[in-house]
Amino acid sequence: MKSKKIVASVACALAGMCAMNAQAIEIYPVDHARFMTNARFDFKVELDDVTARDKVTVEINGKNFNQTLSGKDVWMEKEEGVEASALIVRGVEIKNPGQYTVTVKTPNSSKTVNWDVYTTGDKPKAKNVILLLADGLSVGHRTAARILSKGVTNGMYNAPLAMDNMPHMALLGTSSVDTIAADSANTASAYMTGHKSSVNALGVYADRTKASQDDPKQETIAELIRRKTKMAVGVVSDAEIEDATPASVVAHTRKRSDKADIVGMFYNVKPEVILGGGSAYFLPKSTAGSKRKDDINYIEKFTQAGYTLVTDRTALVEKAGASDKLLGLFHTGNMDGWVDRHQWKGNTVKKFPNQPDLTDSFHAAVKVLEKNKDGFFLMLEAGLVDKYSHPLDWARSVGDTIAFDKVVEAAQKYCDEHPDTLLIVTGDHTHSISVAGTVDDNKPGNDWREKVGVYANAGYPNYEDKDKDGFPDDFNPSKRLAVFFGAHPDYYETYRSFPDATFNPAVQNEKGQYVADARYKDVPSAHFVEGNLPRSESQGVHTVDDLVVTARGPNADQIRGFMNSTEIFRVMAEALALGR
Image (cartoon, rainbow, N blue to C red; front, side, top):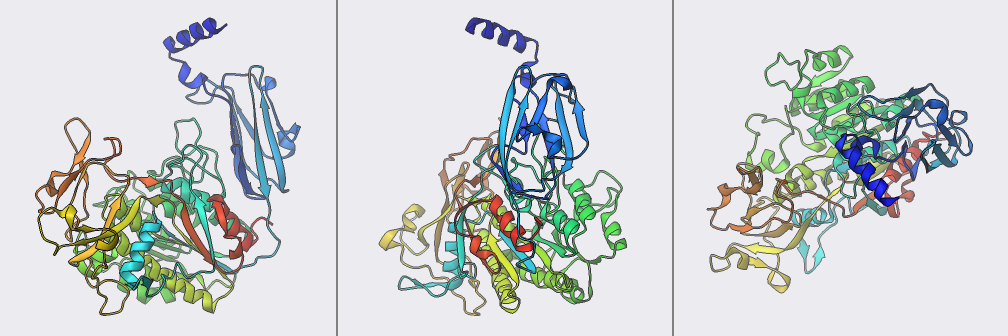
């Protein structure tokens, strides 16, 4: 029997057919899915071969599936591009909480998955929900930000960060359906839908078809709010607004890179507030700098839909109070970080000299959103914490961590005045950043590894904050933090920052491999550091380390212990009674 299977496998491979036919049956939502009553999703069954419809049984809790999931089912005897059959039912929902067992049987195979469906109360506990995410926020970011922003005296921090000073805290796991090491798309999507997803996927279960936007959808919290309440919705970022985390509020695609289409998804949902970078995807292809491949002018469409357009800090501050709908696009791509805008004037600051701080965007967003008497949902992302962590530029990343904490401070003040607001603060995944000690320029010698102080030799850095704004007056003092990343490509360690532009660890060689960027080789402090990642990786990568999540306000007591990322959705949904 074993030899027959081997022969069959060889024959299948020679025929070029094994790739599709060898897979097992797949059911979406997946096994172990835990999701909310009355939240819509697409139900899909992918079979492992071509099968006649009358030879397939699909049951939920022992009964035909359509007794639980009402909707038009579509049977594909040969799914497009696949030598196998599939069943899909779009936009279904489960009305009653409980345990659900889904069983699919064909003449040749079978599969069973289990779902845990929960509900919420009938009455909201909170009027508003504010979710603040610093992309890539690790414990190392928080520690470095606290040292630079608050300082340490005789081993005691002079003050906590605003994100430290919250009554409820938990650890958060971020793994996705397909991997333990996730990206911002599926991690943020878990918060917005209550379902896990796959790398690069937003608001969908990634299926086997080639098309990126036909996968089984998961209703997002913004869509739920639109369908079931009269609340307002706001999305704010300092990255491109079409980037993974802000896009997760509205998007359904297997490819987070579908940025032009994601603008259309924003237009379909029409959040009252949209603030960030990424204007290049709003402009028709005929406009210089556009990244669209069509002639749709989304700036024109949004303004025709009643949005006030602002493109710099001055207009944002002046016009927010008088606006009912606000579209702010402050950069063609990702915005510049706090340190560049306020101190170094590096990267693209000279081209975009009047970009708002995240605190400006937060206050403007709230001014618009709180006009709605039924409350609001606001998701704000500090996306540059991640954008600077990838290239190992820790000083810029920590500068934006402090800037994010200023938003948390403003949100805490808003909660003091509006105790009916649930505030949740976390990241979407982590980076391998750690503070090892200090680097002292004034130590003797030319071997800069010997200028790193650890244990008793670390002492204290000499950052100063004379203007008491919570940011160091100089991010490059003579004795600064020694900060290193654990997951990285080849690079030259220089023990310093570069004000003109973000550090770039690696470049591609003639073999297509990433090697240390030789531009830094002759920096006096530089020495080569061999990477520990595959040579196909150009930057540092996300890590699987748990996130810290903190919270206050109605239902915040559910933030405790260890949680899976989908539980953030549940806490918010319970606070707003979205399962009713």
